[in-house]
Amino acid sequence: MALSPPITLSETDKLDALCRLDQFRQWRSLDEKRYCLVCGKIITGQQIEVAGGTRGNGPLRLSCPTERCNSIPMDWVLPTDEILARVEMMAAEEHKASVPAQTSNGNGGPSRRNKRYNGIASQLRKFALHLKGRS
Ligand SMILES: [Zn+2]
Image 1 (spheres, rainbow, N blue to C red):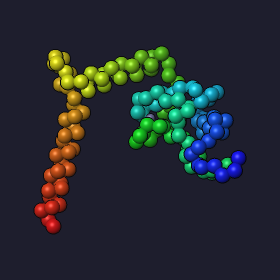
Image 2: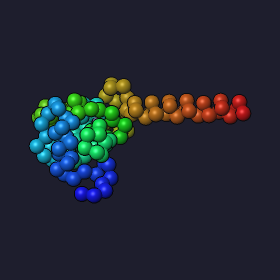
Image 3: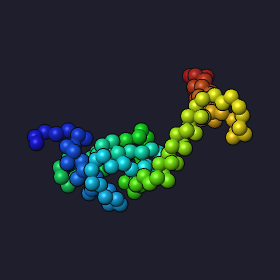
């Protein structure tokens, strides 16, 4: 093993890093799954990103593969049947929300997320106009 880029670890090294840095649960293989409490996704050992120190005792860090998810190993729980069911339910909800609802179900209407996004967009536009007006 000569020059190795920091993020790419061999399977054994990665498993070793998982075992060492995740002091909350045991890792027996990279195929094991965990449920991330922060982003609500199922992640596998394969997907978990290892970053940081390359020199043995450098501060290695584990991070969730989900973009902008800043969870730590403590947030990764074993996916019990209950959790898997919840994940499935949430995925279904998300799917429902992303499809324009044809019947109103009294849940606050469809695509609340889109509305929020538009709100931010119009705020940004206002802000941009504001900046333009000053120069
Ligand atoms: Zn996450």
